[in-house]
Length: 315
Image (cartoon, rainbow, N blue to C red):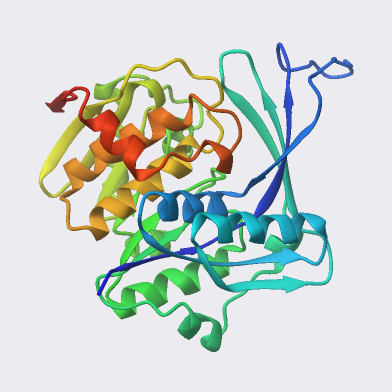
């Protein structure tokens, strides 16, 4: 029986603009034509997991508007099970994304239906988590809901992966429920209480990962964008280099990484092979525009993995 990947998180419609730079306060800046793209960290991770061959189930909430209907269609097309996604009266969550010429982005989020998403006892049972399954969680839904899902997953013997985004300090209890904590550089610095900390090298990420493990999670992966990632657990600290690509849009690259890591773990791969698989999937995603439209297929990732053996560095 295949092991499930259950995602408890957000569904947003992304409102995407391309601009030459970020405007300064009081400035009006001409941008590209507005494009709407299915997104939300939770929905992105579910979509990516399904496209990569995982048995993905989404739990979340949308509004009864055109955005909500479009988000559900996108998940269904990816092969994601959506019976745990509720539709309520009101607006679906949205994200305004400004994409810069180098592919980097700035994002502002309106929670919409995500802001009232809760999981009672029946909702938790509907997740159908079993021992050996995986729960993917993020922070675009109420923290109490993330807590409930993580506790339930731990009680059921499932692997828990927490993407601490949007960045915020987190209680120790939640971190102790986490098997894999997966911050990027900015999120790692905020979790460590040093928001100005620059984490831009393998050594810097290794130090951050070691300190983050002291806060409670069993394992930590610091995502480093074009550098790859650093992984830390009881086996030590290692760096995995990324594939060199030309980035068009980094939106959802971290979500693709998390989903790919989960898919590989659920297939029985060890954490280092899973991290390399995740780096390959994320590399493909940044060469395309948009969130869910950028998600790679399994064949594309397998093909990239055959092109070269990436470097693993013990730190």
